[in-house]
Length: 462
Image (cartoon, rainbow, N blue to C red; front, side, top):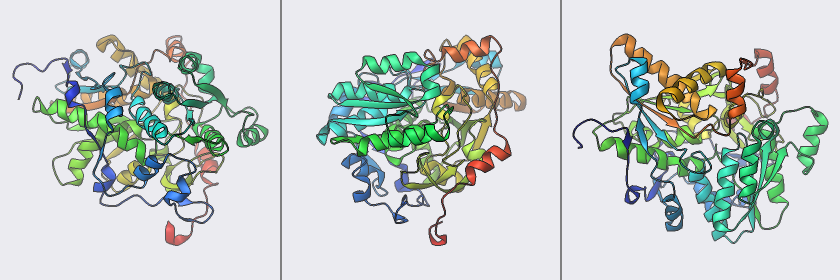
């Protein structure tokens, strides 16, 4: 145990980078429902997935037995460029809020991609290169994942093709520029370069796009191009496995000071950030040990956990992907063009969905955009880091929980994930600062329209 005041930065050294990922699925009391092949309505097999994903990633996707999966040496070597990431104590924010709570945040923005996405991008690029592939395709919302994958592909000499949600490409041109600097080809989605993109544009020519649309295009591009596979930056089991390095490092840093969180908070769009941050702590809960209270925070404009349904649905708008049982707003749902691009996904990770359904993930909150930027601004002015809009959702709820501690006089330890920086999101901050930002929350009728198109699943599989 360290003595004296806990420092602003709780830092591990590179020898303490985890040597293995943690697979929370192996400890779940109820495994998530199997992913289904939409043609047969049977659980997908490795043979079903191998034309789309790298072989090792297929194995990880289907792995429900191994609690720990070794991190390849080549991946750990690249991790040393930006890991371990610091765990920060938000002393100045605590003082501003006049709260007895202790607020920690795991900061994942200390790399050129500006986010946690590089954790999985490096692993996925490594496996693609090991398999002898020429390149990979993917989608990106806010651009964090696309940037991370472009970086990782440049490290391993892979071609990288990114379909970027159209509204995000318009809002964040500098993200596109960074991807291209690392050698990636970036296409705003939906586009006229794929069959599915053309169909979507024909049906809704004025669409701003969505992650579901971009996924459809990226998958089509992968399966129709020799030597390519598709990779995904969130939602899937394989991604949550890779992102467990966040939580493993956070737990190790806190343990050095005999600290343990009472509350763990993460923004949730597809689930990669929250799933990674909470992984070892959720492992404690599943083992019957002391565990935090878990809160998932999503945008009110795309409220899959708080207003969606737990059902089988396609993971993409074009309806070419397998079916996953998850909290969903319907694959055809197109969220408003808010500034939290990385959270504009119609569904949620099957793992997080199952944990939420079973009560292990304690709570989901949907927060409006202007409240998120109120919190982001306060955090920036006190802690000195400009947060990404996605991260600011977690900041917003962390502040709310700290204020509850002020009211009750109870001191709790709060841990949240700061997924990345907001320096590519200045149009959003400009909109907030000049007062033109608005909150666009879908009506019940809009949500019902998306849910009305859910696929019909045999009763025995529901």
